[in-house]
Amino acid sequence: MDAIELLTTRQSDSNLSFPGPSAEQLEIIKKAALKVPDHGGLKPWRFIVAQDEARDKLGEIYYQAAVAEGQEERIVNRAKALPQRAPMVIIAVSPYQEHPKVPRIEQIESAACSVFAMQQAAFALRLSGVWRTGYFAQSPKVKSLLGLDERDEIVGYLYLGTPTVACTKPIRHTPSDFFESL
Image (cartoon, rainbow, N blue to C red; front, side, top):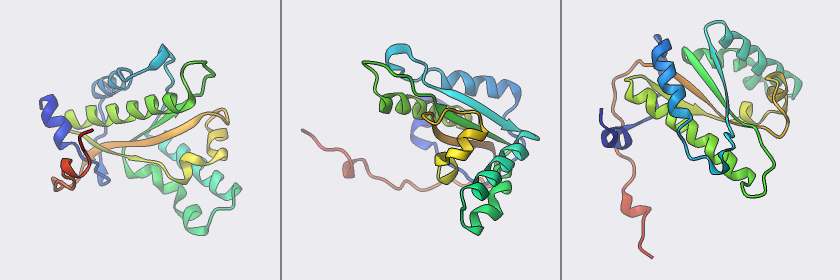
């Protein structure tokens, strides 16, 4: 797959199964994460990989957070199962660093670029993934249980695995609807 094909055909897939990324594929995915724009060379990213039994641990963290924070029953009941939706979950974190020229938003944007780069790399390797956020990315209790600082931002959870359905999604957007000349 060449770069143009990758950039114009990438899609998110939430129906993922085994196998997840091999050790060699994961190394490529990790390298892609570190090649993103990084104003000031701050390296404003940290990644936590959950696979195998660690997905159970992540589910328990979700569960404990949902109970402690009084979430609705539906969220509590499905918390433990969420990390089981893929063979691997990479938690992308932007640990904030005070800097006179690099505002918080730029640091978060760099970490977000790393998630996109990892998903692109997985797609190029004929794997697939979906980038998820939601309540568990915003939960102070999840951050605490993961050993993060309260100022750290969970940019997302990148679920990776093998797509279970060979289905190319239709093109949903037309460039002319989003681009204009000045």
